[in-house]
Length: 160
Picture 1 (cartoon, rainbow, N blue to C red):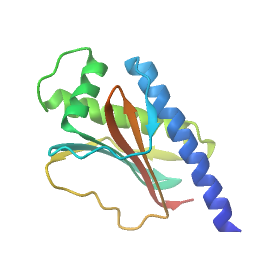
Picture 2 (spheres, rainbow, N blue to C red; picture 1 turned 45 degrees about the horizontal axis):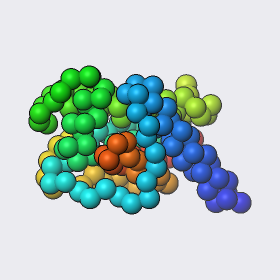
Picture 3 (cartoon, rainbow, N blue to C red; picture 1 turned 180 degrees about the vertical axis):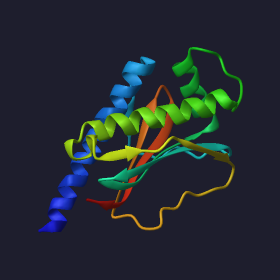
Picture 4 (cartoon, one colour; picture 1 turned 135 degrees about the vertical axis):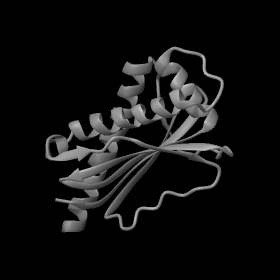
C-alpha cells in the first residue's frame, strides 16, 4: 500500500515539475519549453547546477545542459549575446535551476514551507558524474526550448 502511495506521489511531483519548467521558461525567458522523450546528445563540455533540498524532503535538484544550450539559456535570460562559458552563463544556469526548484516545491503544500533550498552549486567539465548516495525516488526529465535540450532531475533521499 505504501508503494502505490509513493508512486502516485512521485507522479504528482513529475506533473508539477513539467508544469513548472513550462512556466519558468515562458515567464522568465518568453520561450515555450516542452518535454522531449530522447535525452540530448552530450556535448563535450557540460554544465550542471545543483540545488540541495533539506527539511521535509532531503535530496537535490539538478539541471544539466551542454555548453551551447547553457549559453543559449543565458542569452535568453539576460538579453545579451554571449560567446563562451563565462561567469554570466554559470550564474544564469544556477538561477534557472533555482527558479525551477523553488517554483516546483511551492506547488506542493507539504514542501512549500517545510523544505529549504540551498544556493546553487555549478559544476562544469568534460567528464563528470553527479552521484546521489541513496535515493528513495528519482524523477529525471528532458526538456527542449528552440532546438536546445537539457535535463532536470529531482532525487530524494528521504521524505518526511
